[in-house]
Length: 276
Image (cartoon, rainbow, N blue to C red; front, side, top):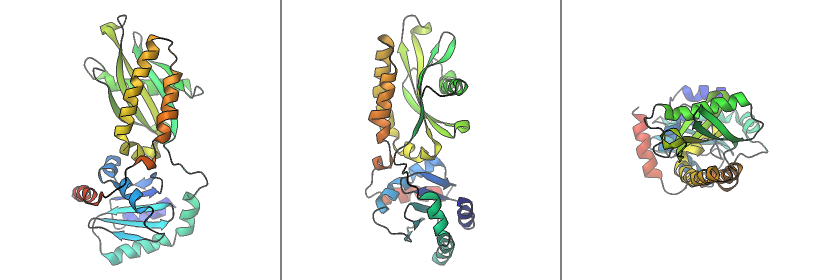
């Protein structure tokens, strides 16, 4: 189904994105970071309660179409209206099949976490210290640990500053949110251990994660203190990991994307994209 829609969109545009009403990316030709810059998610939240099925919205450099209740299409560029209407009429004819495929009983309102891993670079090298769920394959855990700690391998002096980064994990169809920091310890070489908190979420939630970048970074920075505390005391790392699950990531969803009047800001970014 999405292949047919992609073919129709590609026949007149090279920059488009298909999203569900909860912000999940179904298919896109636009770079993920560009979706964030154009504030497409914020526009989606703004027009969600204001439009009906079949609505077609024209902006200066953007067209938005809502073929079903839960499916939105964003096309960047300037096109003749008759051409746009013709193409979206073709998509409308696929309505029943689109609706059947994407309107499901279970709503994915929040970013679903696949794995949370705490790693440290000890004397023997990078090592996974604790992770949930514990049923995860050991070989995969080690790969995630190595990839997370490799973020620090090219940095002179290791994790001299706490920071967040994003890495795709293709084998797991996931986006990795990697937060690096250090724990001071006189027994460690150099007086500190490099550490990483890695959170894997479904790759389809990447736009939601990018839009919540600052919220995620603030929360993980607070949790860094908890990991350091546990290292120095009981080493009960499940406690701060539960905090990630219960107090934070359950709230990272499309609902946390700010709505409001972002039309001018969004269109300015779209104009930059059109020139790419």
